[in-house]
Amino acid sequence: MDAIVAASINAFDMVQRIAAATEQQSATTDQVTKNMEAISNIAKGSSMATEQINQSASQLALVSAELNTMAAWFRLSEPPTIPLSRARNGDGANAG
Image (cartoon, helix red, strand yellow):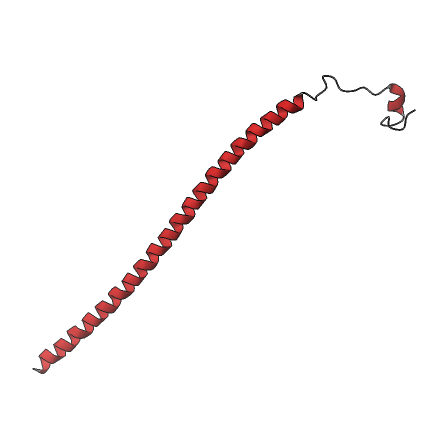
């Protein structure tokens, strides 16, 4: 009879330890799930930000091309010449 009681107590202790371990594993699994969701959200946000950067870069390239086209209207076909007398005196600002 003592052997049966001892075996029962031993089995009860093992069941309690298994239940505690199962509870810890469940809590750990929940934490891992939350962390994975957080990582997923960060990755989605990063992907969206990258797409926005890509769109902004494309728009910037278009605006830059337009600006270059507009600036071409103001470019001189030949560089301006400074009269020789002004060139000898410096940049020509004080010549007269």
